[in-house]
Length: 168
Image (tube, rainbow, N blue to C red):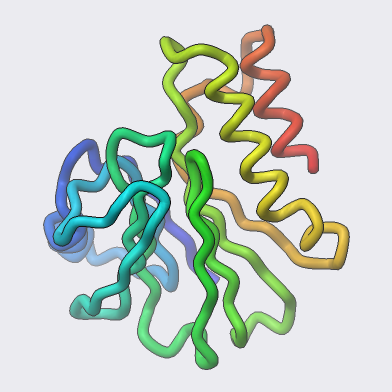
C-alpha cells in the first residue's frame, strides 16, 4: 500500500492533485490537511466526490479551521468504507481491501502550538475514543497528517499528549 500525506496550506484538492501528477507520483491513499473545500461541509461532517483517479472524502473536524481530505484510488476498497469525523481527525474504516488485514486510515491535523494544551488533549481523546477499541481488536491504524509538533526532539505536556495517542 502506497500512502502519501501533504499539508496543502489552503489549496483545493484538484490543485494538489495536479501538482502531484506533474511529479508523476503514485499512491493508493493520499491524506491532505488544510484543504479549501470544493464544496461546503459543516463542522463535524463529511462529504464525498469523484476525482480523476478515485474518490475524495472531505471532512471538517470541529477542532480545525480548515478541512482535511483523503483521496482513495479507484477500486482500492472494493466494499466501500465508513467515515468518522472527530475533533481534529477523520478516520476511514474500509469494509474490504486487498491488504489482508483490518485497517483504519486516520487523517489528522492536530492543533498548533499556540492553541491551549486542552485543545490538543481533546484531539487526542477524540482519536483514542474513535480508534482505541479497534486497536484492541486487532486493527492496524495508519495515522498520517500534520502533527504540528516535532516528534524527535523536545519535551513537555504537548509531546506527552501526542505520545499517548501514538503509543496506543
